[in-house]
Each structure stands twice: as C-alpha cells, then as structure tokens.
Image (cartoon, rainbow, N blue to C red; front, top):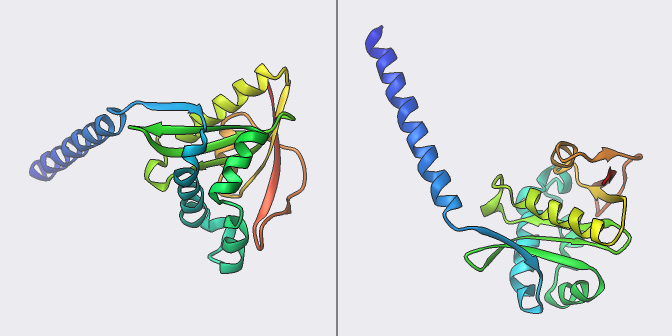
Length: 182
C-alpha cells in the first residue's frame, strides 16, 4: 500500500516538474500585442483559417460548405483592407503571429482568432484586453461581438453577457450576440 502511494507521489512530482518546464518554455518568449501591418497578412490568414478549422468544430460541425464560407474572406488582400478600415492587432511570439483580433470604430469586435499552437496561453485574453483598451481610447462605453459557440464561455469569463437570440452565421454555425460595458 505504501509503495503504491509513494509511486503516485513520484508520478505527481514528475507531472508537476514537466508542467513547470512546459510553462517556462512557453513563456520564455514574451508575447507582444501590436497593431497589424500589411506584411502580417499571410501569417494572420493562416492563423485565422487554422483557428476556424481546428478549434471551431463545435460550430462548423466539420461541414465543408460552412468551413469554405467562413474562411472565404480570410485572404491576404482582405486582411490588408481590414487594417485600413478598422483597428487590427496581432499577438506575436518570437516575431511569429499567434493571434489576430480587430475592432471597428463602433466598438464591434469582428475578429478574435488564435493559432491552435497557442491555445490556452492567454493570447485571446490579451487581444481582447487590447481591443477593449482601443474602445476606451475611442471614447466608447461598451463593446459588442457575435461569439461562436466555441468561444462563448471564454467571453462570459471576460465579463461579456448574452444580449439576444442566436443569429445565423456561416453555414450551419450560429452567432451569439454579446456585450460588455467598459
């Protein structure tokens, strides 16, 4: 009995050590949130497309037509146009784009995508904080967005509240209107 308990402690210790090492390795390169530049377009589009395909399966349900519709405007030319039309930010680690977010002058968050490789590392939270800061700088008192089913829990944890019935999204996906008072 004692031998099994000691073995469990050893396993827990090794798991804790491995977690600490992985956490250090992940955070050894600082994340930077900065305004997007035209030269970020290709990398940003890869992040957005991968995020949709790999992380939003609850929404697109692996429906090819939905994925095609959702990713159709995630092109370098469109991204460059978004930079001119709204406030677009990227999260980078070691000069590699790992997240993309945007907010319109109206306070509507229209993009928030994270690379699957950077999921659960605070990238989306940092991007949302930057978008909220931008909204404050614009003199806005609230921000709005249309969440995916996948991201709803995240937004609720960041202080957003549902503000209406689901709306039709891309293909089989729905959007969930949410607001946060600043």
